[in-house]
Length: 292
Ligand SMILES: [Zn+2]
Image (cartoon, rainbow, N blue to C red; front, side, top):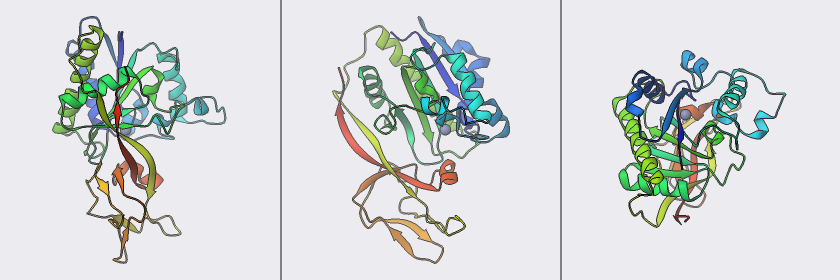
């Protein structure tokens, strides 16, 4: 049974959609009232929200692995905040919430991207339900890459990131806010049905994209980016990039093409990843049988 749910916004301080919705629900808590459920809200990184920045010292959503939490040499605003949140919400395995849903946005064309950190019956049922509710849902999995997960939501045994895009950083965008709110409503509907053991019959399989790697911008010796994401892949998140496909248009006018095997791509030209010089991520597409 899922009884206690935490909805989180502002883990990244420049993702205005989640912050706007959390404040809306804090003003009007009746909008979240559901029989048998306790639903709390949290603004995760108030300092970054006040600054309108993704983070001040370190990405808060990379701070919740045991490796980071136990590293006493690390310091900074987000490290302090991560320890504060672990105390407030409970550490992994002792979290006070059965489910944490963390609301994010992307400047890339991610649709309504639901991010899994683990594979089990609950999460697969939730994904199958959402895939049937909406035609803009794309499920990605980070379970394979990161066993000791660094996401805030991974404090809870059941967890999910809802990442909606494309929308600019710090922008209040009607459609993105509406899609995010609808997705949360549908997720809460799912929880009620799951708890009542009255889920509709769901597809036996789900489509899941799994991250396989990152492609970096071409840079010069000063680490300046010297080629932009090519228009042929701009906005083409979750589509297939073929061998020989254009990926970068260089300052000198030349075009760099994809040399490896065909791959799916996402987070194409994501503004939040310029600090790491990541141009896009690569993924495999799998159809997996739901766990029962
Ligand atoms: Zn984010």
